[in-house]
Image (cartoon, rainbow over all chains, first blue to last red; front, side, top):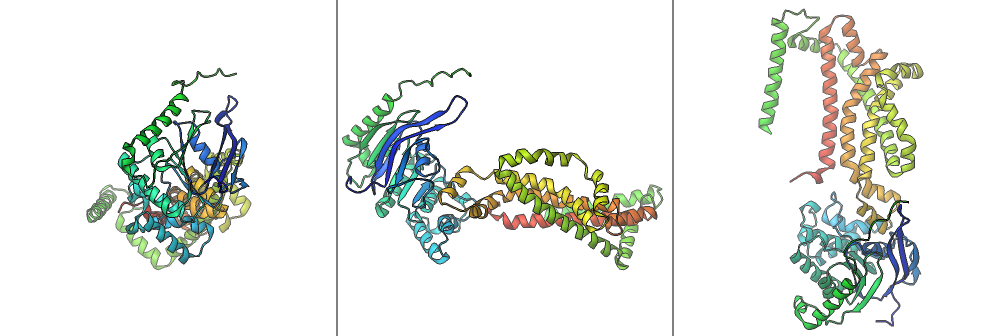
Length: 268
Length: 250
C-alpha cells in the first residue's frame, strides 16, 4: 500500500486553544500519513484531542502549527471530497430520512432526478428502504446513525471521517453497526479515518490504529492490524486479537502516568 | 375535541347570561352597561349602515401593514444581530431602551412627525410588533446546533444555502412564537395610534361612541377588535401547524 500516493499527510500538527492561562494545547507535533483505501482508527482516552484532530482533518479547524495535505494539496478549508459523520447522528429534524440524505447533493446543485437516484441507492445500502419518508424523531439511535452514514457517502467522497460514530449506541447495536460499516467500506473502498475510544472496535475495523496520548495529544503508537479479513465477531476470541489488544491497552496506560489532572496554576 | 367545543361554548353562554343579568337586574343605566341584546342590536345597525365594515377595514389595513413592516425589519435585524456579536453589543442598548418607553408615550411624537395619516399608525403598530419578533429571531438563529453548522461548512454551503437550508427552518419554531405575540400586539398598536389622532378606524369608533354616550357602540368596536386579534392569532397558529408539521406527534 505504501507505494500509492497518500490521501492524507499530517505534518507536525499542533493545536492550541487560546484561554486565560496562555492556551490549552490539544495536539502536539502529530505526524502521520493515510494511504488510499486504508481504514485507520484513532484511539485514545477522553479529552486527548481526537475530535480536534478530526476537525482539523475535515478542514473545520485551522491548526496552530504544522500542516495537512489532502491529495497532495495543503488543506485550506472544508473539502467536498470529504464525508463527515458526527458523534450524534446530527440529522435535520424537519427533513425526512430521504431529504436528509439528499442534503449534500442539494448543496452541490445536482439535478433532482439524479440526486434522488443516488440518495435512494444509499438508503438501500444502509438497509433503510422502508423509511425514506420517516422523520428523524421516529428512528432509533442506530437507524439515525445509518442515515448519517448514508448522508456522508451520498456525494461519493474520497475520504470518510468518523467521530466516535457509535459512541452513543448500546453495545449490541454498536457491534452490528461496526459490521455494517465494514460491509459498506468493503463495497465502496473509501479511505476512512475513524475516532474511537474502544480498543476492540478499533481492532475489528481498522488496518491501522493510531494511539494518542492524553492531553496534549501526541502520537504514541502506530500499530498495523494484520488480522485477516473479513473479520467476524469471533475474531475477538483469537490469540492474535488478544495480543494486539494488550499492546494497545499498554500504550494507553503507559501514556497515562497521572490518573489525576495536574494541579491548577494560580491566576497571574 | 367535541368535549372541548362543548366546554368553550357553554362557558361563553354562561358569561353572556351573567352579563345579561347584571345589566337588567343591576339597575345600571344603558350608557353605563348595555346588555348583550342591546349590543347585538347596535352591532346589527352598525353592520347595516356600513360604519363597522369601513372602520374595521381601516384598522385592518393599519394592522397588516404595521405587522409586515415590523416583522420584516425585526427579522432582518434579528438575523444580523444573531450572527454578529459586535453589532449586537452596539445596538442592543438602543433596542432595549426603545422597549422601556411605552408606545403610548411616543405616539403623539410620531403624530407630530408623520402627520395623522396612515403612515403614523403603521409605524406605531410596527414598533410594538418589532421587539418580540426581534428577540425570537435572535434566539431562534442562535439555537441552530453547532454540529449542523459544521455539517453545512463541511459541504461548502454558501451563506445563502446555509440560511435557506439550515438557519431558516431551524429558527422557525421560535420565530413563529414571536410572530404569535406580535400578531396580537399589532392590534393594540393600531388602536393606540387611532386614539391619539384619527378620523377612521375602530379606535376612532370607540372615541366617537364614548363622546355620544353610545356605550353599546364602544362594546361593538371592542368586540370587533378582539375578533381581529383572535383571527390574526389563529392565522399564525394555522401557519405553525402547516410549517411545523414535523414537530407534531403523529
